[in-house]
Length: 230
Image (cartoon, rainbow, N blue to C red):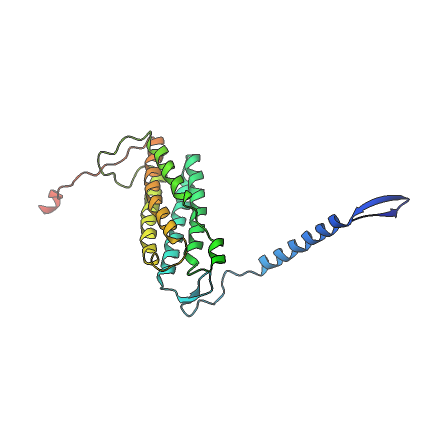
């Protein structure tokens, strides 16, 4: 609706729909600001050893679902730390995307025995795993072929990526107890975590290679004889 009103000797047009939309947006903004100010980091609801899943179930904190959530959170923290030290922009973009995917993976894990509506809200696409596989192939192409085991080492970024790789394996194992009776897209998340450890291994090699840092190879060791003689 548009109305005209006289002001200071001339007529001006007022779009009522636009006016109320502007006022509504301003009101919503004030409400959101209030909610954010009122949110607290602590809730005290878990002080007796139980906490809630996304679907509202109260469970003990030592249930496998929370172990898996903690393992994924640890993994994301290690990925974030590696990204701080990563000098390659493409790897940094990869790691940022991976952290976002891990956040979504955590949402899937937290949605235990979901309703159809809840499951539709926390979908984890299988295409994320396919993307990792193609990225592994891209990063592997210029690398020297593996002829032996390599030690976790290399550039600073590579070192952190190797730590993240081990955290990915831990997260993967933590999801296994949920595979049979979770009810959500946990199998898709499990495959992603499996492939993610392969990606992190390859990304570590790529980082060292591009920084000109030589990989350290495994060499079978003999006992330290000079210590055995004393």
